[in-house]
View 1 (tube, rainbow, N blue to C red):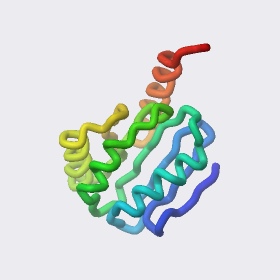
View 2: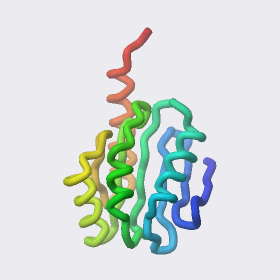
View 3: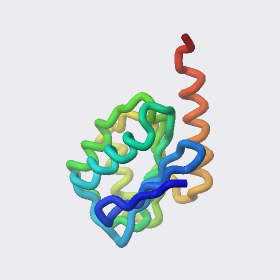
Length: 135
């Protein structure tokens, strides 16, 4: 597994199963600069290979509304799904706002259990593989 800390706010971990974990650090606030850097690093590591993302916001204090809009607009056909891992009522509130008002372009679901999130992401990746057109 490879990892990298982005702007001292997010640790990006590349798992061997093509699931990318974006883990909030130090009770951070997610800003546009960090969100754009997260996308850039993830795409540099992954290229166009099929993958899924796990966003662990258990140690995040706030997400700017512009960041929520930016994240929702991200449609990269190789990303099969986004699982948002929450740990508090406050996190759930912001994640629900994201899902309700931003209408993310990839399948997105909230979890409070990391193992359940990983299982769901693997299912999303299998679904994506089945729908891809074979040459």
